[in-house]
Length: 208
Ligand SMILES: N[C@@H](CCC(=O)N[C@@H](CS)C(=O)NCC(=O)O)C(=O)O
Image (cartoon, rainbow, N blue to C red; front, side, top):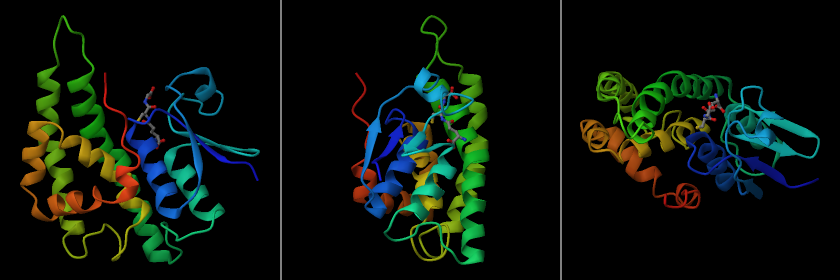
């Protein structure tokens, strides 16, 4: 069978989540640093978003779908458990991560803080309005990881890999760092998981 190809730029949180899964499972893959909306991405994802994956005749878009394929199609430890309750809980936290955490941390806070019209400056009203919503996300995640240090059960799952890049990115901003620091279990969780080789080996190159 041909090599797995993950397509997408390495600073995307979702590209990193899928790459972390490959690293944790020991699945070899090639990263092709394609930009969102590029022709090769649009050829697979109808909305032009990254990541997409190619493996032989299999073309996939949406990070969770790619993660499910990688978890099931390749040997190695499973990070989306087979047990029905644990499986549903992974789905639950991935869904919450994608609908709430990604929205408030990445779309409403990080992206407008980094990408803005230089003449106008960042939209501080929008960025500040995201902070109370991010705090709600942090509170929910803090309560979930308080007992075992993981979102589901007492082992790492894809639910953790899905949110970790977003939480770690949030901490690169002073207001985000202060927010996470209010939640001891969440702070310890981010510190512990960012020490894993899967996180370190998928670090994007420094921006020029
Ligand atoms: N639900 C999608 C979200 C993917 C997504 O938002 N990707 C971002 C980069 S992290 C992207 O491609 N943004 C550019 C765009 O939407 O045009 C997934 O899980 O794969």
